[in-house]
Each structure stands twice: as structure tokens, then as C-alpha cells.
Length: 151
Image 1 (cartoon, rainbow, N blue to C red):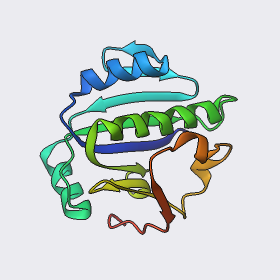
Image 2 (image 1 turned 90 degrees about the vertical axis):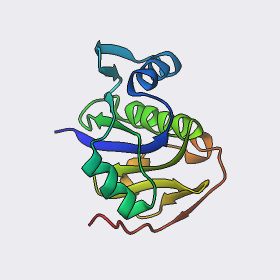
Image 3 (image 1 turned 60 degrees about the vertical axis):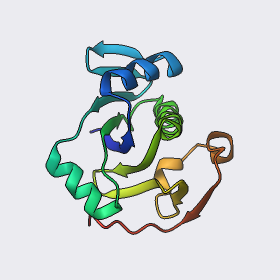
């Protein structure tokens, strides 16, 4: 079973651009025209449909233009590296966007950046296992509980 995370992002980047940037920046391999593979991680990028955009806008007060999916294999010996790639890719894409939220299972907030303010969900500890966040997240941020408006 894979662990599904998605970055919902307000940006001018298109899905194909994002995949090309991620392949180059993080050394990911093309699985097909719409998906990338890396250590314990499978990545996709799409433009969300209008209903989903409205749902995110209602919950987080921004309209996403892009949804980047990260499926992690927790049974892989490379799970920690896949997790690191997801976090680095999220930070990289947040630099190329406006507002964004990283969701686990489509509803639990892992982190969010709204109006330029980055917050890590203090209650989402399992995704940080084995990661030294101070080495991965260099942007100013705070850690606090983030209850999800999607639950």
C-alpha cells in the first residue's frame, strides 16, 4: 500500500513544466509522459478540476492551479529518501508558487503556506521520520497543530 500525499498549489506553472523541472532538479526518471519515478516515490502532476479547486478554495482561501501527487512506498528500503524528495520538491515548488498546502490522504495537513507564511503541522510527525528538517526547510516557518478544515 502506498502513502498518498498531494501538494495543492497556486502557481503559473503547468503540469508538464513541473514534471520536467522535478526530473532535472531531483534526478527523477520518467515512468511515462505524465509520471516520474524516484527512490520509493512516484510523482504525478495535473490541473485539478473545478469542483476540487472550489473545495480547496473554500477550505484554505486560495484556488489551486496545480496538484502534484506523491505516492510513497513505506515498505521500500529507500522510503526515507522518497520522503526527502517529496519534502524538497514541495519546498522547491512553493518557491515557484503563491499559496499551497501539502495534504496526506487528501485531508490531513502536513504543511501549508498561505499569504507567504509557512506552517508545519506539529501533529504530522510520521512524515518527518528520519528527516532533519533544519537541513531541508530553510524558509522561515513555525510549527503548530493544523486542524484540517477538510475533515
